[in-house]
Length: 216
Image (cartoon, rainbow, N blue to C red; front, side, top):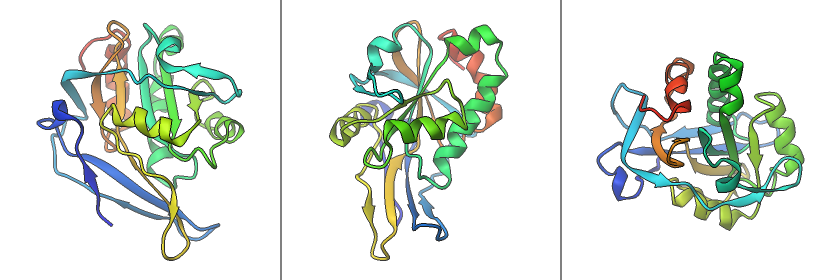
């Protein structure tokens, strides 16, 4: 199953975005198929028309309401949609961000908001999200809630999210976009996009600029 998607009109000239299909079957070997497109060697895509921050009100790992716009207003913010049962791309992306973040001075680490929004809310309860993120970056924000709300929020960023389902072999498959969107502390707009190929070195190089709202 090869899938690809493109963001809204502002992104047509930028790059092809990817969807990842991941499956697990209670200890069986994970299944993951990722569509790939040849693109620029540069990890960051600076958007000519930045995305508006999604109007998402969800539930955090403490079971409290979390208004994404209000809670991250004026703060450098990285948003990623994924799920804790993902066998590959999601933990890799979040670990890359966590490792790069640790290279920053403490004062800059405190400014940065990394927000992980689950695409599998049925299994990713607040407690499950909290446990998973604790092993990666305890300061990261984990959000869960109604799937339709999450899907609609992702779509405003050109990110496709599909409901989790079982394939013909009974494996649970979740398909979701793999982009990380960086929001500026100056404008609160999503002005930089990273694909799944972004590395720790890419984020380490770019984070100091993103925290200041500069273009990497």
